[in-house]
Amino acid sequence: MHDDDNEDYNPVKTIDWDIVKVLPTDYSDYGGEVVRWADGSDYPDCSSGCRWFAPIAGQLGADWGVCTNPNAPRAGLLTWEHQTGRGCYEPEDDLWSDE
Image 1 (spheres, rainbow, N blue to C red):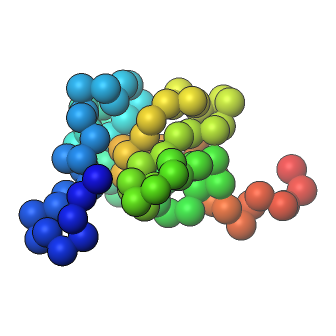
Image 2 (cartoon, helix red, strand yellow):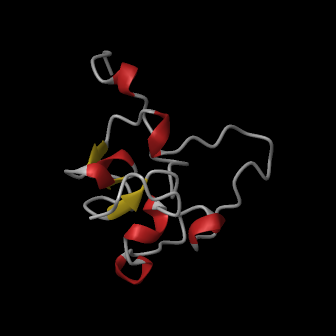
């Protein structure tokens, strides 16, 4: 639990990163091998409204969640909202589209 009035509060540091599994498909800023925007392409992340990102309960849910895409490398894993997305991101507005 944190104090909302504490200017030093940082949600990235609230979770012990030692418990977060890092995969090669994660962005390099978070220990993975994907260098974001290296080729000029769009590199979305879970915070861009991915339909598969399920926020965890409580205040940490603003930044942390679980990937529910059964075909994604991070399926079922605790995920920082900016940690990954390339190759598995699907926008929420595609949720009801015909496939």
